[in-house]
Picture: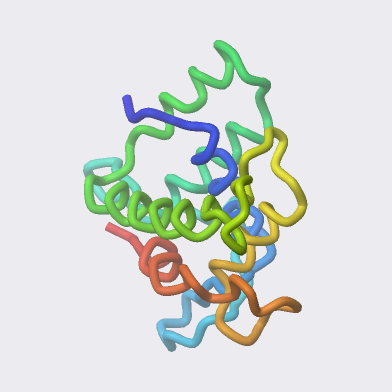
Length: 160
């Protein structure tokens, strides 16, 4: 089973919300035009005969576990069910996670406290994770806007 961390849950919460509201997601019309609405219930990445899913379904599965179960055995069981992601899908997720960790866990303005050092995360931390996956120019605050969009769109379009 893959290892799930607190940081991962923050990322998944932001990404799950982005998939739910269509923030920077792609339409399935093959136009390649970002910005369509996505539905978590339709996040099946067409895992084919192997029953494996891509990065997008992995995020949707983990987001569902985090939002529907409390920490403990029930969540652990739910997360084990998410472990059907392809190796490529998980690598894409790790690249996105790395980008967001580097960006959102940095020391802002050289200060001594990391932006996302608290649990639960601060509104500024949540905004960093959410804004980092939006297209540049689509955020109210441009500070983190679009910094991890390329990694997000690769993950979002990962369909084995």
